[in-house]
Image (cartoon, rainbow, N blue to C red; front, side, top):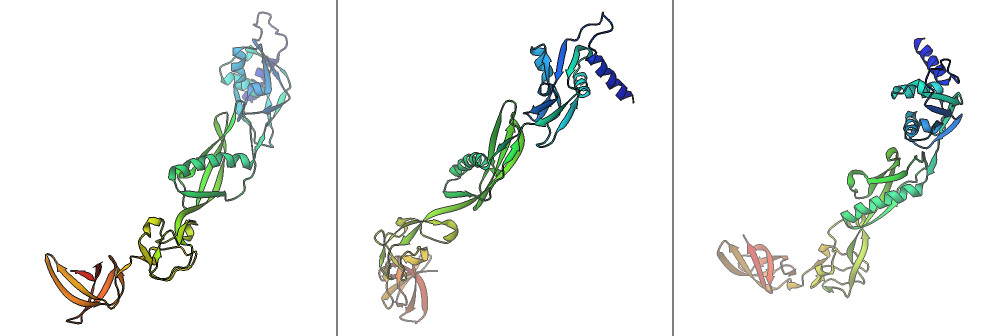
Length: 326
């Protein structure tokens, strides 16, 4: 009851058109309250709803006083003369310094602009490209899901978008870019833009059928751009890796080459009489044997000892020479 009487007294005091006491100082400011107002920013200021006179620095300072948070889109709020006086008193002003004119109360709505999908995507794309450039690699990206338009205040000074890749890095197949809407430099809303990522790399592919034992090189294969998810494994990624090699098995046209598909030209052939060098520390023993399979330099070969018929496994080191290391 006391608060109501005090507020009523403040209103009557501020609105009194003619002072009863002629010695009383005339109000320093007039506030002309509008019946309807549109707010551009995130907060309601006195200047949004009324004109403060006389103009000047003091009037601008008074006009910047905040009366509360701007209403959400589609919602209205009523600001009364009493709300004005309470804001003035809370900021250290005397009610006697003001004369309020115009409407008894003001109906407030937020001015709204719509931000569409293209604006969010453009901002998110710039942030994503910067991270992909830093990470390196051959990557394509596409929007994972459509975005709805967002309604937000245009701001008294500015409205801008700020995009950041969530976590500062991409995952193998996806990434999220958070786009904030800044109204007068303050984050008002945020939208998560989701992307699908496709990663590619160069893989060697045959251009024709290659029979087992034939050389592999630029004449019968080339580099092909392939999706990483479709080429997981020990695939050959440069031409240099196959120079001087042969096909270890029959290869089909347009076949992606794996390390197991190629090998060194055979130094030893099945049935060859070879010298077997057995080494243990500094001791070397040589014997003779029969190779049981073809082998290129550095490849494994099984040999049957000519004297003991024992099976020995070693590595082809030169034409006719197998080294068994203990």
